[in-house]
Image: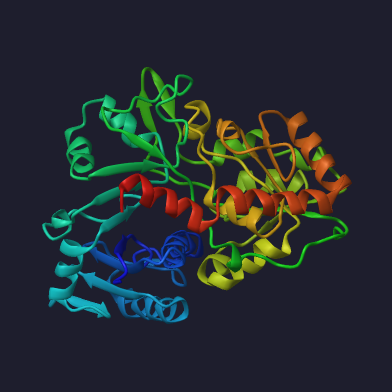
Length: 393
């Protein structure tokens, strides 16, 4: 019997940084485990980003295409990258121009990851075009504000999934805009992250995270409130977290060079600041950084917190899969994922202190529990399998 074909349409060629790449690869590996044939397609008019030079432009096309070739060879999937901005138009990968069009038209489903795929005519011929939203809040508010381009874009999809597991619930103020939002979360291919159980902590134990310090362009005003996209403000609220657990080493892999005042503040408070650029440019270094940490402490975006979206980080899911306990900010995700062992949510500094003490007092137990949570709630075959079931594929 011929395997059903699922297209994964995304942006890991346009933005070949580790967090983005693994987000897509997890879907591909989850589909393979379930017996589907995944094909990755990026059909775009956007210029790619070079993670080594930090430049965006056509010159990066050969480099990012080579990155894709290596990933496809390593993980065993077919792919195509159609760079619409080149003259003449360049196509890389395993599919010809005609085969790309045929793939969109005849695949059993097309997953538009993070809404990263422009909706060209060929894409719109998909039998089942699925919008997969990793960042809840912005699109729902745009719908409520009557922004027609947003409604038109979303309406061209046959189904809508969101990492905002609480969207549509009474305690989440976000409107649905008339769409049915299926709850989902980041799938994780557990075998990429697992390592032997850690029975003993390093001295001192390292609490780390990887984050953009400042991101712009998606703050949004709604009902006389501004909801912020950048995590900067949340990090600043808890900049003295190291004082809660002074026996631990606290580390941020982030770039504050454009914000020297904040950099000096965090260094005074006892943080070690590590450059994220090598970690982001080297996909395996990203995995090693997480595996070599003892736990994650991180914050969430203001939009996720105040709107009670139920969002959970794809990176935090990887920490859990590596057996690394996680302390993360409350977004109402604890309604859907158990906390208190291996995974902790916080609202206050006291919450952080208590969670750190619990983790360090019985690390082996919390490490094992982190893996159990990853297996039960984030295993790629479970998350993707649920999506396929809800789609009827």
